[in-house]
Image (tube, rainbow, N blue to C red; front, side):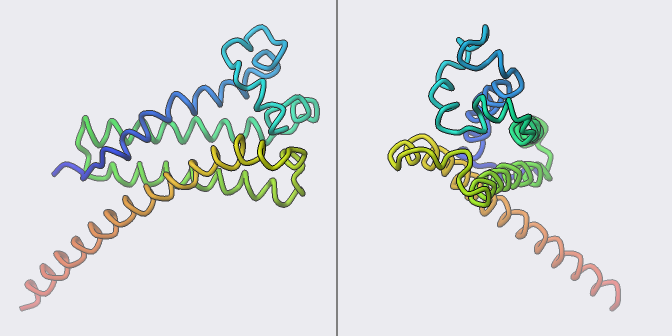
Amino acid sequence: MAPKTYTWISLWFLLTTPVILWDAFYCFFRPRSMVGGDLHWIWQPYSIYQEIDYVYGIKALEDNNGFTNAQSFLNLVETLMNVSYLYLAHVSGWQAASLVGYTGAVMTFSKTVLYWLQEYYCGGCSVGHNNLQDLLVYWVLPNSLWLLLPGSIIYTLGRDIAASINTASRVSQKETNGKKQ
């Protein structure tokens, strides 16, 4: 039996894969990917973002702040899981594909919460210098998508996984009860 799939979930995983990879490689290639670097042309929009969020900027690089590349490494793991979900759900039809997609979404959601909490607990050390409009437009709103959609995926796939477990439990219970009679 093929796994239940949702177009919007598959599209989210498909469309975010290049975005996540682009972001991760910006981080891994710093300082070459930054303003003044020979590869900056690939990441031109980051000329704004490295000033909005110091985690992406020169300060984090100079301070040897490992958070940036650590979260980027996890981005690669997350992306591998998301692409695996697409393959397992749509190509091989593996019934447990939803668990892989669920886990990838939990990673995305958890990393984003961690990112926000890190900012909260450091007193706005990376984005606190922004005016309210820049903070909302360049940090809060874009990062909110990484909570809203993965949160919805967690809910949807989690509901499906729970339903499958409940169905399997009822079938198992019926089989067990039938053997006792």
